Image 1: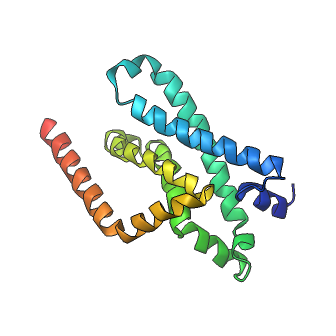
Image 2: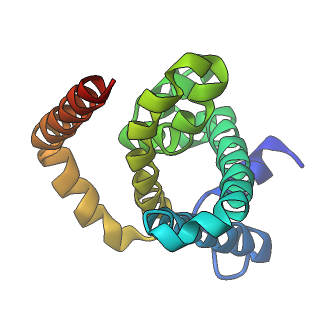
Length: 174
């Protein structure tokens, strides 16, 4: 596939472009299933399905990683007025680029820092950010994105407080 065609496929699909619509459907389905599994895994009876949940998460994280790499690679079509490197950086540090990165990156952390596996469990909440990846596919979610942008300081403060409480709790148990 040519780079321009890859860009057309990973962008919001047109009614007449079956490949692009199929890509959108697969990504949205993977996001929704990940959220359902993240919620399901909080219940005790889910322990019998841990292997299956982990397998699906691994496959979907691989899918999200490839999608992210393709979005970075084709960013010069998204921002045609910028040089290739600047277009990549603009996408990587954009709101949607950061959401995309944060939706799969915590999965890889234990591979690079095995001793911090327990601490990285707090990052599992970030899997919920996959919900905001749907923003690529449905313009009606831009309202939610705008609210999140305007309230991001409060959200980051809340996440910081929750993480601090968790770490204090973990430290007090050891």
